[in-house]
Image 1 (spheres, rainbow, N blue to C red):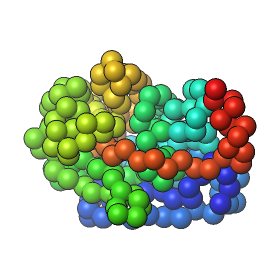
Image 2 (tube, one colour):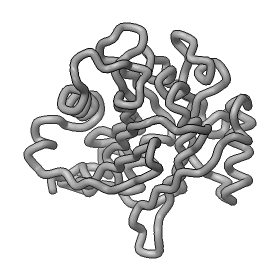
Image 3 (tube, rainbow, N blue to C red):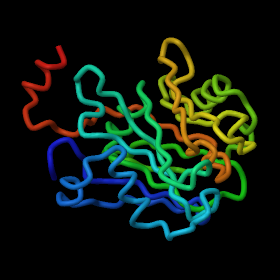
Length: 234
């Protein structure tokens, strides 16, 4: 596996409630180096022409980059993308904060979500006894319509994780307005980045995964030169 990657993505099918881990090979990473390019790869490969952006076949994709989570300044960036309901083209947005770093520390390079849930749900990514990422789709009807700060506080209490990292929509996206946002870490202490988008957050609301949350991990994709990486970070 190339440096800077884990070689795993998480597949989530909201229609069936199934999740699975999928391995990727070196050649794909050398062509699509994470983030926007990895999102574009899956959209171009898996979506048929004319697919409904708000339909269950659209892909909602969270992806990290080569240095996401590494001990380097500015390395917390991650992306979310889908076929845009606003333009019908490539809809992608970028965010900083802790969310992307925790996703890659969970051992994942991306999450690809398909299908549509019948009721509001959230996706919880945690680790098993061996530290392998495990995903669980849980009911979120009690969170639907809540403001983002209240949702984050409720999830942290419900899951017993004081530093749970959360990417979520708010009430506007649940009504599928044209350009809502996805929020990550809704407090000043956590930072408060938002993913301002050309439609991915509307896709979130239409499909009903209200929230994606990640339990803290401590695994990063290994850099080619840890010493030089640490020196640059300092």
